[in-house]
Image (cartoon, rainbow, N blue to C red; front, side, top):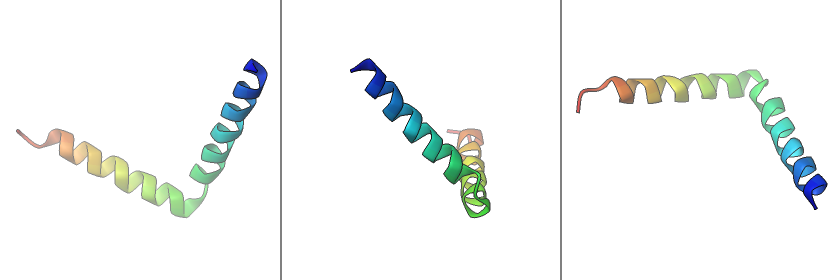
Amino acid sequence: MGIMKKAGAFAVAKKVYDEARKPHNQAKIKSAVAKVQERRQRPR
C-alpha cells in the first residue's frame, strides 16, 4: 500500500513539474507570485 501511495505522489509531482516548465504556465505562476507579494506588502 505504501509503495502505491508513493508512486501516486511521484506521478502528481511529475505532472506539476512538467506543467510548470511550460512558458505560458510560467507567466501565470510569476503573476500569481507577484500578486501574493503585493498583498503581503500592503499595510493592514
